[in-house]
Amino acid sequence: MTRTPFIAGNWKMNTARSGAVELAKAVAKGAPKGVSLGVAPPFVYLDAVGQAIASPSLLLGAQDVYFEKNGAFTGEISVEMLKDLGVKFVLAGHSERRHVLGEASALVARKVQAIYAGGLTLVHCVGEKIEQRDAGQTFDVVKRQLEELTSAMQDPQRLVIAYEPVWAIGTGRNATDAQAQEVHAFVRQHLAKSWNKDFADRVRIQYGGSMKPENARGLLSQPDIDGGLIGGASLKADAFLAIAAAAL
Image 1: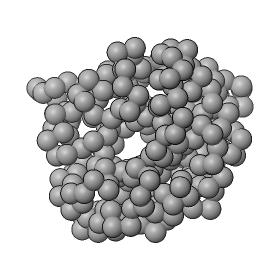
Image 2 (image 1 turned 180 degrees about the vertical axis):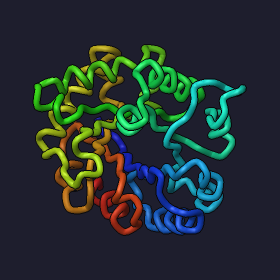
Image 3 (image 1 turned 90 degrees about the vertical axis):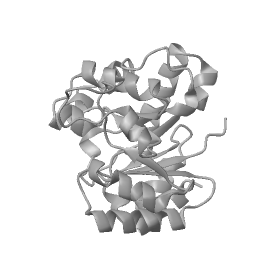
Image 4 (image 1 turned 30 degrees about the vertical axis):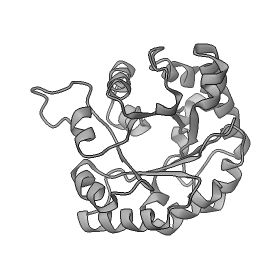
């Protein structure tokens, strides 16, 4: 099964407006063919970045969303608002939302449902903390987080799983190629059991956790790794594009 690699940049709480626009333009200009590229800037720069790229070569993404359609939810952003700005994909369950900001699994599941039901591509983040890995609980943790998905999600093209070992995010430490592949293979096997093999073979599974140009080729050459959810390295166009090139 041939899956088009998907390299997505999560800019987190970084950049200023002018820098965000310049970065997005540089990435769009250098985007290689044969790889799907996307960037998820901070909410306040989505409109500016979206207008700046206005190109199918670079997908606009959002880092988070709320599950309600509208109403008295101060500070929150809906799926329809994101779609109005041209957003194509949304992250859900990122480890920083789970472990820094305290989002419970039930809340992540509601966001997951809202993103998919709203017609956007869902990038569902899963991964274990270091103490969970050391205790041999990696597969149990990932399985529980995959259960935040629902059987109503029948379009594999709009479902992306990002495996991000929490201990490798922003630490400079990354999972070895073999460690990452082992969990990616487990994710695909779980999807095959929950849906079917054809569905699982079509879903793209990204690795997230200190992927950079120096280690990208080894990770991306693994049979079940279909791209990357890139943090720090996505803030520099040359580094981000080098990772994208490694996916070819």
